[in-house]
Length: 273
Image (cartoon, helix red, strand yellow):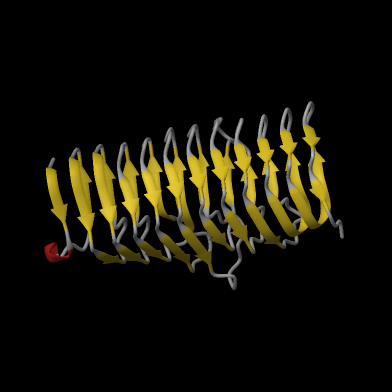
């Protein structure tokens, strides 16, 4: 249990564990081949800044972490089937201005999971190695009763954004002003409830599985998005969803309304190939 402390490069840390603490900063660290690199448990007002991780199982792992930040850091290649940054039972945190370079099959950039609410993921960049299989890979993943999180102004290359409500409901999350390109899966895959999907660009979601560039769950609001070049549907939504003011070009299907009482209004579909 510590407070008001900075852990920096001169500490020569190979691993950082912060437990039941507040007002702690971990910065200017290089961590590799550890699991995890930074562990944050039962803490608040922690800042992780300007760290670099490589080949870690969860570069930063937060459990019961609140009002904290992971910023201006670089995460290279989390281990297969693991996450570079992971939050569980954690709320009101900010993950911002970070870069993710994923080079292992199944690795994921950011996971916000298990009752984690009102977190902000903003201005991050993620690059997934296009030579690897991208099946079941998510750039950012929100789920398992995690509500009211904001995914805003990120750029993802080679991987989708996934709102996963398949097992336990995930509600009222926002996906806004992101660029998702060259994904071999959906660009935005929403299986939550009442998700706002707005003003995103989804480009070149080429896949053999005929997925959608944007899929919206129940009560989704899909507005003002641009979809260009997908060999699946441009936009597909579940029940009681609204699809409005979107532009779709060069997709095999324009808009598909799968569920009852969903509506599409004022959309532009220029080319169906």
